[in-house]
Length: 365
Ligand code: ATP
Image (cartoon, rainbow, N blue to C red; front, side, top):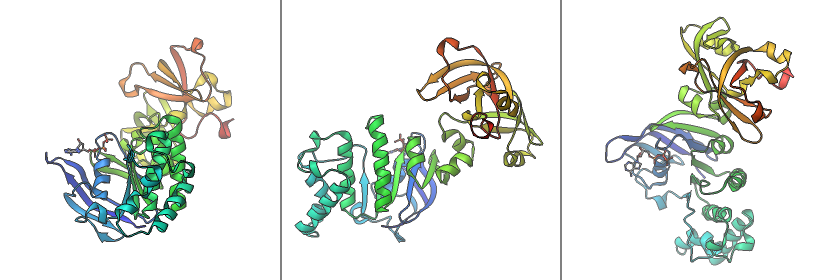
């Protein structure tokens, strides 16, 4: 196991444009760090530089405190888990898992190989499938074989490149839990690339958000959600996305196009000396006023909006509204805890908002 340190890492491909631009991150020994960002932001490039599949244009990469920029991938002792699993179809599960040890010719005795393969198989519940070929396994089982191969190497770190993106939603949930459990029990330093918010928010100790090759913020999932460093992170983290309302701050109140909205103390203080601000309010702070009680309503402000469309997800519903066709308030959203009956959908909706706390549930019930 080892720490991984990125110091001012830059990657320029042939066109000279920096795909990764001056990124510095300290990943502690045993830490699980997620790299997340929109397509093309440079997350795979960064991972490939760590593993050694891509040259570093400038900057320094340290593993366990040692500079490894010039070291070949096989000498970095990192285990990469790919999206397509990279399993050998003609080998059994047993031999696929044993493969990295067979590759290090003579380094491991047959007994040692057998012990490590069986331990990993046990950990991954693959013991009953050791004699099968990959073609006869489910997607989740293949994924676990790929994990097994990473485990037997006793690598310095695990590097994951969108390992779950080929799996269906249910399996993805199971594998996410599995990876999380394994990482915590093995306590191996891990770097995990994904564009999936749920994976980013649930797996990592810290999440690094990238945009156009630049690091926007690295923080715990909770800190990213509650204290985004900039508008990009605020809009990127959280689904559905945060609403941004323009306005001016007077005392503790945001004077916005949809009316006055009381702000939490720290937010009001942050914007006090600015003329015009963008207030970010999460969708779950907006509610359909018709479903709220008097005490709940009295806490917030209300405004009438036009319903543009809804999305029903089974346990919640996203409601998209616009306000007087004001483009500044386009696509303000809310999530509703209660299902709206399709027959009752109105084109006009009174929306209640409170930026200091959720209107429904908690202390307002
Ligand atoms: P995705 O989520 O779509 O996989 P990503 O965040 O992993 O995207 P990268 O694959 O790292 O992004 O690509 C970052 C940038 O570098 C992109 O603009 C991409 O077009 C460019 N790029 C990637 N590989 C090469 C290459 N071999 N040659 C030239 N440009 C490249």
